[in-house]
Length: 101
View 1 (tube, rainbow, N blue to C red):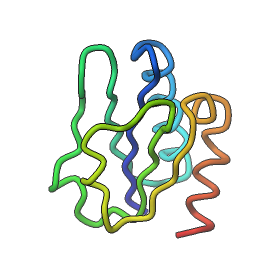
View 2: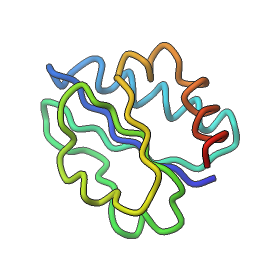
View 3: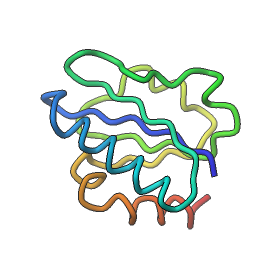
View 4: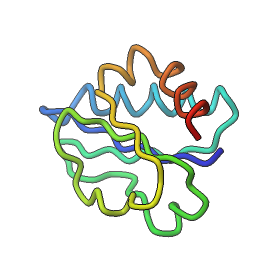
């Protein structure tokens, strides 16, 4: 399954990047293709492009703060989670995506 994710936290530092790493590792461990964008203190990094969105089934978006350019994910199933949930429960989030997609 092809997925995308965007992680962001209020401070835009530690949790943003820890969540990105955790959700990416969880998805890859289950055999999924994923691209993870971070929206941290340095702005948007590893930006998800229109090309990246081709064939995407679901987007995992953290809800700690509003995600910028959210309209890019119209038309795919969106899972809103916290950055803490990504860090502590990444595999469960991926399992929920699998079950609902």
